[in-house]
Image (cartoon, rainbow, N blue to C red):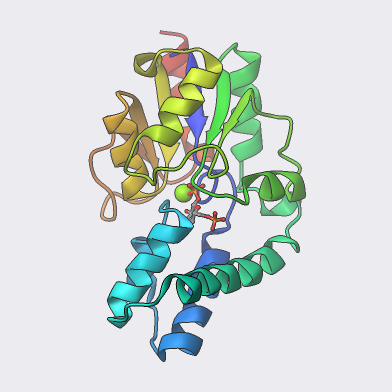
Length: 216
Ligand code: B16
Ligand code: MG
């Protein structure tokens, strides 16, 4: 294990409920539809355009491109407004300490996130500068479960995929890690996720396991 690649939303910071609020508002205002937490599971880890396609499918509408883009822009404006109110207190418990401990032990750490707002979230939560590389929605084009975002992170770190562990909270992200030839530690609950190598409810809970793994 030479490197760790961290998904952002749902692993390091709790922005999932902001995405959900913004998509839910768009669904209600544009399609008079109630987006449920179960629907939202499918939106996790998936990039903005793919989420907008899913929403249109659920509403059974076919929007022309300009209107489709207007919907994405509106959702993003609502989301960014919520992100602007974030502080370092919105980093998930133990996440910062987990990354710092890996770095002290010589493990390279990168971000692998679908989000185009990644740098804004890192800045607001005081996490910027902590990572050796950032692969996000501004540098990749293909949505998870395509492995592009993680393969790009590994390339930035100059580490072979087989020597990387990905930390992911979304099913699409777990599939992306596997497709990229990496091991995956899921962050979440076993009834929602499958195909991972290990699972813990949080990075905090994963701490001592990875300390032991590094020293074996
Ligand atoms: P944006 P991650 C993902 O972040 C979110 O989980 C997903 O819900 C969101 O649609 C996607 O980022 C795109 O975000 O609209 O900010 O570009 O989990 O890959 O860190
Ligand atoms: Mg995520």
